[in-house]
Length: 154
Image (cartoon, rainbow, N blue to C red; front, side, top):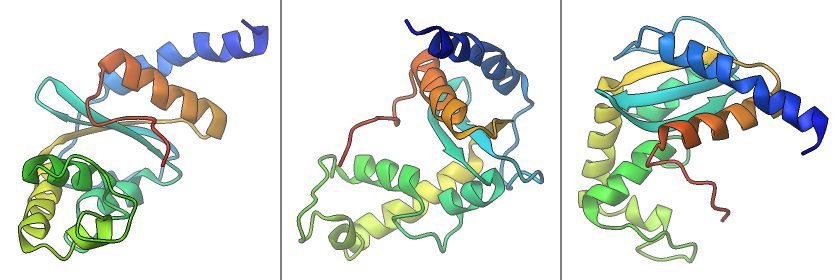
């Protein structure tokens, strides 16, 4: 392993420990304007890790009722699961993202998913460096085995 990469990887665990030691918040965006990674959990079940330049804005995009399917990606995944629309379609039609948002059953599931996310525990940790932030996101996903993260390309 290249020494430069090894040093970065070895420095990720303390940030992970700070994330896990944070007292979770719920129901409102954090007050701090922070670049870094964040974690949504239900009880002891860690569900989703993300990263953002502004965690306060990103929290809101995940769960405010006005967020659309492009901004509330975690809620969209939860709504897919709730309605049995598990396989993404990148073709135009009723199974595409835009098509699903025309389906009243899916829209209801999407709105409920955003409300569910607002009730989840939320933690975050600052990491302003974009490279370290990306590696920390992957590190936390792997360590916590978050089920709603994937690194698949579109």
